Amino acid sequence: MKKTLITLLGLGFFISNAQEIRQEDGLRYAIQDLTGTARFRAMSGAFGALGGDLSALNVNPAGSVLFTNNYASISGSSFSTKNNSNYFGTKTDECYSTLDLNQLGAVFIFEDKGGSSDWKKFSIGLNYENTHDFDNEIFIAGTNPNNSISQYFVDQANFIANTDFNDYQYDMGYETYIINPDTNNPGLFISNVPGGGNYYQENLITTTGYNGKITGNFATSYKDKIFLGLNLNAHFTDYVRTTSLYEYNENPENASSQPTVREILFDNQLSTYGSGFSFNIGAIAKVTESFRVGIAYESPTWYRLTDELIQDLYTFGNVNVPSGDENRYYQGPIFVFPTYKLQTPSALTGSAAYIFGNRGLISLDVSRKDFSEIQFRPKNVSVYQDLNTGIGNSLTDALEIRLGGEFKYKQWSFRGGYRFEESPYTVDYPMGDLTGYSGGLGYNFGKNRLDLAYSYAHRNYKQYLISSGMNDTSRIRAIQNNVTLTYSVNF
Image 1 (cartoon, helix red, strand yellow):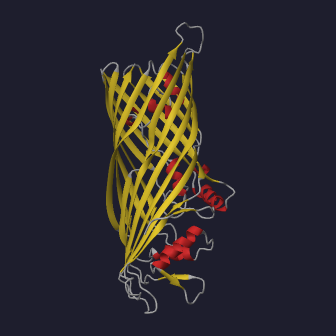
Image 2 (cartoon, one colour):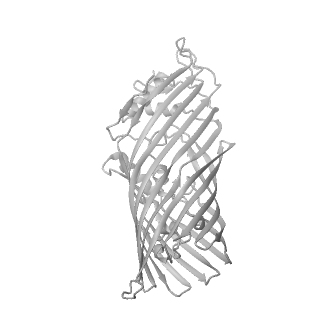
């Protein structure tokens, strides 16, 4: 059957995670990975009062004017994630790795060597970074003692909003014998999956794509003591989430007048794409030649996003159905939903660094971000009002602490770092705290430099199998191991 294209003009019901927009969709853009150059990553991103690195511009834009000459760098990374799943006592592991050119940029330094002004120096920079790599794979498997995924289609069929998308979900379930009219309650529907529990379920979730940012930077210094900077950022995103949800049961058949469904396979492919804008302002002060402090503000990012969805539904081994319908297939159209807006929260970062001459340094950043400020728009649409209210009630402000150090010996640099990020939830069960460690080294050839970094981080969170009809979740422990190599040149 040829796929058709459907544009939903009504705003009453939207989808994400293959069904509805959820808080997790806002967090996908509000939480950023630790990315960037190898030096930046090796020190866990603690660069707010240091500058002198192209990825440091993302923390404090004033840092570009601390370069002593024109500078450029390019970085490539290996991103590796291992997801440990626990679903009703069944544990599974899934690993996914990818390679990416994640950073490319340059900064140009201009100095007033005549000394005619106290504003002696300014810089202009341009930098690209992959701020979030979405490539990942999760496999969940286990026996659910209570709930069948068929309850999702029952929930959709009985959903009072009766939108185009909701009607389509009903058609899928009905045409594949998953649901039937409830003879005892006219106008309502029931599941044809036999009761009794012990439903074996699997869910393979594969995500691909990226969230990229191009930064235009300007910074200047006053008497080589105060450094001020501004970033203008253009964001672009392309996210694809593919899920394959399977269920099998061996429960006794339903009564002969009611079909019995044994196996269900529900495939979804959700694509989200769009662009956004944000800005940063920051300042760094030299309290002494060795001690520096910094403060920086990162604005919200204002996104315009569009969702597209493709769904396929299969049932196998159906009983009490017309001959030839034992295996049933329903191929859905392509849904293109109206463009919506997302505003991520702003962030405020305070920093301090101490430099031990030419021997090394230690640096600390503390950032605060209020995730309850995530907003979906238009605000006057009821579905967004309810979603934003839920975000305000369940999400909260969170601190991120980044600590890094560097020791130099001749042409060699040895680096290490620590990162801690609080859960964005008021109760951290949906998503726990993040803890990360990093290390690396670099070699200075004179006008160019080669740096290598390794970073590790882990975080626990819960993963829904399906968005409504059943609230059962798998507990996921995500472990990230990343390696970055950067080549830098002074010119």
